[in-house]
Length: 140
Figure 1 (tube, one colour):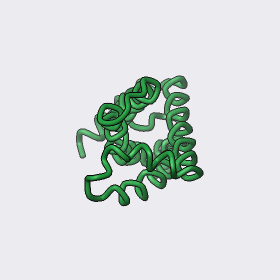
Figure 2 (tube, one colour):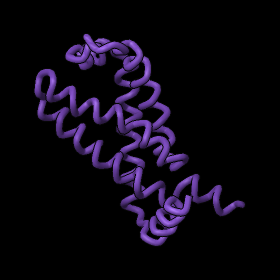
Figure 3 (tube, helix red, strand yellow):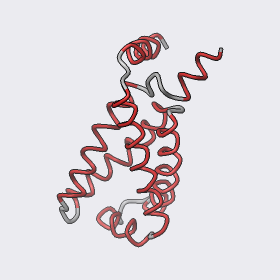
Figure 4 (cartoon, helix red, strand yellow):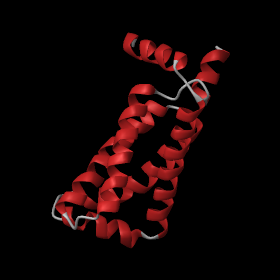
């Protein structure tokens, strides 16, 4: 718990609007990706095809869409940002692995790597000063 408090204090001292905009843009990206998978499940099934022999591929399909939509909303508002990004990490690592296991698509690989870096960054950095987390903390 002490580490999280130290990270929050550091993040609140070093918070800037561009980082908040980056957090919001990352959340919007995840939200749109979740809606994209929701509207066209064929894309998601084709993406998971290289890992089809692994048990739980259907579980993965039913986990990816809600995790992206709910996680994206939480990240946009800055509510439970660290938890939301931790929930996104296995999905984004899976996206990077799928790009190597299946057909290599450089655009998807770059998007996955950028999303992975942002996810790791916001797991460490948190939601920042301009977020619902900070507002609720100040109301206590």
